[in-house]
Image: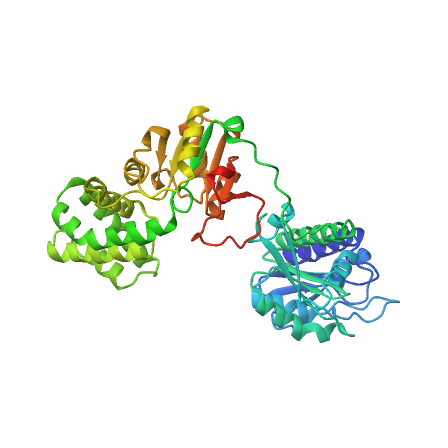
Length: 473
């Protein structure tokens, strides 16, 4: 036995003692296994886990064949591999796990009874959900539940099926029995186990108190913006402006005019810069194997090839417009195209009727209003400068677009705070996109969700205030 193998077996014994003290492996129940390369070290069956020694640990291969059996000790029964072995193997084979644990904790047992007749445990809006790989505070954590059998090994098929059907789950509950939980390493498996035991305990306690552990906390009443905030940051599409204006007016106009615009401005510095950036994006699409025919053609063409280059750039730009890609060079081109339409009066920027009274109220109370949109700053100023309610730019202090960062990135909002010279608690952000609200909230900004006709429905649970009119702010 190598030193590393001995240390792994010793670690299993240490974990067994820790988990015994926590009530996970009492009464000889439960089991622990850790993988090291092509070997899996596993506890035996029917032994006091808190007294187990390294020389009592079995070694099996990835197919479950025993490659090292502990020697029978005087006065003790012949060592027997854990009945959990075939169940553990599903996690190792299907998920490439580095460790798998089996807990007989009381909370793992009781929590399944809160979901009688149901095939999964769910909980949301708990901080410890963040301890489960791939999950966040606002996510609904889902752990499949399978029915118990008289013998442990009989659970193998149903547990393997549950693992296959729930690729995001790191555990499976067995009704009125316990839990199997795994991770890429023993540290991650231990963390997953600790977080899940905590969440099960929380669910049981909240149920006893008559509380719903799947509902978001009730939001605090939103104070008046004029009293609580010095800055208001606004999204455009679905917030100040109906989505239909963007989808049915702005996008079709830019798509139908992009060819003529590129042809007449091809040699200009702004267009050259935007086209070069667009081609770099097309090349990235090709590298990432997500490119279609238009992207491939544009990525490969020499931009000095005149009409052929213009045609390829046009087709790629039209594709990006159809896909509503939030990329800076596309937004720059669209802004230039829309400029002609705004100045000629062909297009007027539509805003909600309840938006202008709120702008006026904010101005009177000294609140500074800024815009943050995926559309270019130039396009933002055109919309508000040529709106259906006249020139609204006198009410607006600053304009931010994706040059400052992705709208779903916390770092972007921190950069905006630096630019505004404001504390996060002084800024209110209104958007129709939950991921943007979450990013702003992570930066300390107070978000409010705009729920308007035509907006994409917000189906995920959250704790943010929702408004259907600026009169609600």
